[in-house]
Structure formats: C-alpha cells, structure tokens
Amino acid sequence: MTHYIGRFAPSPTGPLHFGSLVSALASFLDARAAQGQWLVRIEDLDPPREDPSAAAEILRILDQYGLYHDGEVVYQSQRSDLYQAALEQLISSGAAFPCTCSRSQLGGRLHLGICSARPGEDCAYRFLCPGTHLTLHDGLQPDHSYDCQQSIGDFVIRRRDHLWSYQLAVVVDDAAQGITHVVRGIDLMDSTARQYLLQQALALPHPHYSHLPVAVERNGQKLSKQNLSLAVCGADVAATLFTALQWLRQSPPDALASAGRDEMLQWAVAHWQPALLSGLSGQPAPSSFMRPS
Ligand code: GLU
Image (cartoon, rainbow, N blue to C red; front, side, top):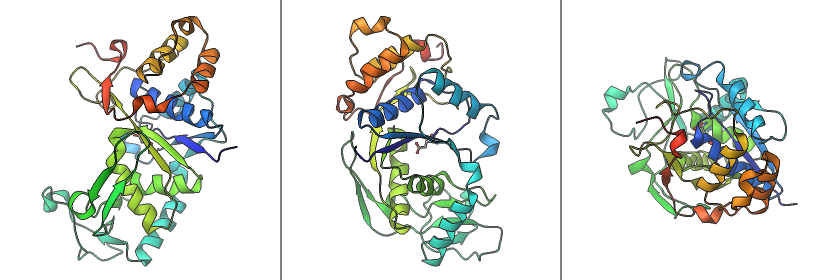
C-alpha cells in the first residue's frame, strides 16, 4: 500500500460552500485513489471569526456526501501545547523573536529584522525569515519561486492576543498527523511558502503539495464564507457531486448522472485524474452556487 495520508482542514467560520466542497472532494479522491488515509482537522484557532455551529455542520455535510474520514477529527483549539513547544523550539534556535510592531508602524512594509521588544512583554512572535530563495514544486501548478525576504518577510506565528497563527498550527499538525499529501486551493500557495520555511526551521518533513483552482464568483472573487457564498446543503447530494466532478474536469459520463452517491464516488475514485486540472488557477462556480447578481 502506498504511504499516503491526506487531509481536509476547514476553518469553522461558516458553512461549506461549493469551493470548499470541491477541495474536500479532490483531497478525498486523491487519497482514496492512492489507497491512502484521509483525515479531517477542524482549524478552530480564531474564536472571534468562528461560527459556533459551523464545525458540526461541516462534518454533517461531509458525511452526507459520503466523504468519510479516517480516525478521529482533530480540533486545533485543543492542541496549544504542541504549538507552544514548536514556538519554544523556534525561539531557542533563533528562528523566532518577540515583536510589538503594529501594522500601522510597519505601514505595509514587510517586517525584516529583530525587533527591540523583549519576551514577557505583551508581544507577538514572528518567524525570522531567512535570506534565501525558495522554489516550490507542485503537483498541479508550475514551479513558484520566492525571494523570501522580498516577498515573505518576518511573519507572525503567535499573535499579540495570544492566538496561534494558522501557519504555525498547520505545520505542527501536518507533521504530527503524518500528512504526506496536501491538496487544497491555490489561494493558499503563498501560505505554502511560509509553511515550507517553518518546516525547514523545525526540521519537519515537507508534504507533497497540489494546489487546485479556486471557484470564483461572477466578479472573479473567490467564493468564500466571508463573501457569503451560498452554502452547500444536504439536498441533491448526487447531483451536486456530479456537478463537482464536472467542475474538477473529470468528465463523468452522462449515464453516471442518474447514479446514487456511492456509485458516483466509486467511479470518481477509480477514474481520478488530477492532471486534468494542471495549470488552472480559477474557474467560475456553477451558477446555482453563486450568489444571485
Ligand atoms: N483552514 C484553512 C481554510 O479553511 C485551510 C488550511 C489548509 O488546507 O491548509 O482556509
């Protein structure tokens, strides 16, 4: 059996929309086609932005779509000790430093260099960005190169209000869960660069990344919970799966349109061809999942 552990890692800021459904479906199909495991992790790190009912609702919809995960669902809100240990490791190796610079002090510039703040103060912690170039190889997208200090800078890994940053938590959890393959939207490509640098600094393995195109609205904006995109509901599951497979360019045969959910998923696992999405960065969501204009 191939050693493959994939995951879907939604933030519970609202219900699943079509864009998150296709990410969940693509990562599920990629894992199952490789006879791998597929885990679900709820990224509930930012309570002020969360909707208290969203995590349960997301898990319910995944179940209704037959996207069954392996193992227990992991909640980032319960894993602070792991993030704290990683922060301490970075501080002791000189790769993280306390910082009190506010956004307005930085005035849009990237933070570069050690701040005069001392630990113990009411401070954030930043990752000290190395002065290196980084080239990311991707399963679906062309190579992406970064001059790290020019385009990334010293980014926050623990906020001043003591919330953990998404970047640090994802790196720690992907490693702790043994994730080998990450399939997610291309909007997270620049986060991948940050995560790659953190993996290097923490001596953690780099998963294999594939960045999917994102589903966009009529105005070209990415569908997101923030722009109140329509939620995927539990009705018409098979028809929605069929539409999602078409959106993922898998060309499901017409005859499959009348099949049930499980048959459709079986077909999709057996015929999964991610390469059909190569180089695509975005495409319109089906009109039934866009907000009315
Ligand atoms: N939690 C992130 C989101 O919902 C995705 C994280 C990831 O896939 O790494 O946008």
